[in-house]
Image 1 (cartoon, rainbow, N blue to C red):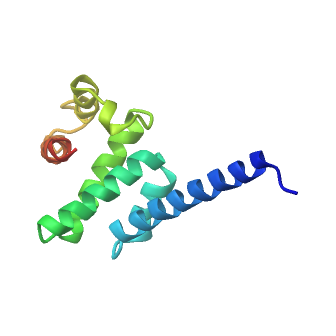
Image 2 (image 1 turned 180 degrees about the horizontal axis):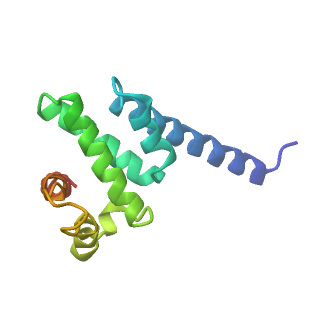
Length: 136
């Protein structure tokens, strides 16, 4: 005879594995057509919650606009980098100062970047973050 605690524990494990497979499927669909690097960026270097949020955002963008591969890659890279910089903090809990500190981290001194190439990355990430956090 199986105890009630074992049945409850088994059902919890099944529901967790079911949500994990749904999450993994969304991440796979969101990174479909891209190099495996971007799927690995989401699955291995980003927390499950943030990876699922990024995947949902990418899937949302696909329905709203004709999403190019490069735009998809830039969004995944920028959001995964932000997540990593803030130690996998949930996107919903991030505040303005933390995002600005990430963007300020992109700044380079004149000696190491005389052509000011960091400004393009800074502005691109800023625009991507504004659109993402409006969506979120």
